Length: 406
Image (cartoon, rainbow, N blue to C red; front, side, top):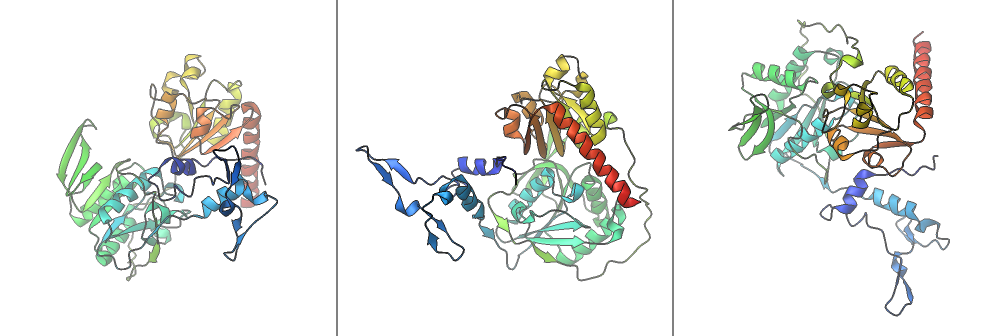
């Protein structure tokens, strides 16, 4: 097991938020303190730990009184469970599930659905095919419907609309929510609305009562309209669920979907040069900063990973990268699913530009820099050695995959 201590940004946020249900559990237990007379006092009730049988034990060696035991005890505390035994109505959500996991856009959508459901309704998530997600409970999902079958693989809008029609007939939800994104939700939602002969609300970013507000005029104006049954929501339409966990009870369709001959054939993904992808649309960005000393190795690593290259303002000003590759408030705001920062300390403008990225990986020599604090995964070390090891790991993985295929 590694001896590296990894930060938990979510636990730190809970410890700062006094209104969070787990705030008290995240506070360190005070075992001793100095009294007014200068005498050291000990809290005898705070010494020890709870055993597997629920009996409090005292470890005189002090091994159980360190930070590890406190962190374990805090991790065992669960969020309050929200149950809806007999839902009065359903709010159906169709997440994009890019890569088989919930994106930040999907979690915002589930947060909006949770607001519409209230205490009487249930949020029903409809997922196509196999998935890798294990956090539906903390994302706000009360019921989960997985539509399995090879007909839903790849680009299959006709089959998916047919499946959603079957779900609509069985559950008759009060609202349908889909992400208005380029990952498939925007097109699927508009096709589904056409099949239902309903006018959807698009690019919705706020809902107030029975009125929704969406972007219009190339994103420069707001358009308010009565709340329709089908809503295509933009990113950051609501705060994701963070203070409750839900049952995620599985449900199934009562009828078998009829097989129809599709008019659209999926010919597979088309290889695209990562350098040709605009920064604002890239899903995997490999960005370099002042800490990169071997830029040839940096470009080689980006090519091996198949990532779109980015850079900090310092790297651009020094002439190592083009101006259109600059990431940050003074450059391009990015929404990548994975953002790797190599040798970037994390200026406030740069952190603003990557605020919407799902996962941030930082490679840096300074363990106290702001980028390390922002990152979900940090690697402390010399960038050249780490990049070389990364190239070798990617080559070994691909060679192993080729041998398995042969």
